[in-house]
Length: 317
Image (cartoon, rainbow, N blue to C red; front, top):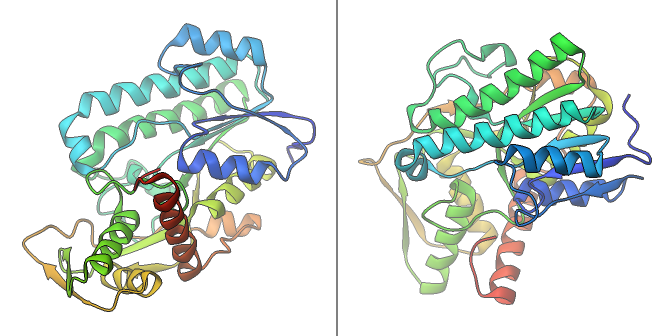
């Protein structure tokens, strides 16, 4: 067990949705939380990262920093997604190794798995088939970071571990319709339909694809659990274990928002992968399970969105 008491924990990417949840979660631990705004530390600059680690000497690192975006962004800038994420990962991981960091937790994404992996997806499915083409650049970078941690564990005995979450949502999500993921996009779209008195909301595809969603504070709790209790070169899936169709998800969000209109489906638009459910048996066996039901998580996400809009007049984190 890795004891956090009295330790300095660096959260890379503390301003993102996951990073903020980690800050909230670690405030209940007897540890010092280290953060570094982008203006202070550019993770793509190797010398700057190594100097920062040498000055601050963190005992542990949770790697939540990454260049992220939706399908359109990935398609428009594949080199940026591959190169910038490789730089961010390798600079931070190597600096941690040089600074003799005691524990490092790398955060990946379920997009690392093959597009047509058997369901539910086990950790052993990695590299067993072709990736989803729309985000393969990001996925390749994440696979490289995961494998680098595994290699350092195997070659040097460095306690560098990795976790792979499913689709995330919650406070400080990105609600920009051009770049957001499905839950924040539907929250904003359905809320706008309610405000405008629209009778229908059109969804892409058939509404039949199944997806697994994890509330971001559950992820933060799972990551802290792994930081304390897990040490092995193989990565670990983290998910809710529950899946829902896109159509049912939209209906649940409508109930949360208070929208009473109907949904139509634009079947000329793609559905994407039919199903993407993680096998969470590994982390369950270690003694951790997600605690937030989808309905409760959606209510908290919508409340944050509504409060942020009222307070700041914007619709994204």
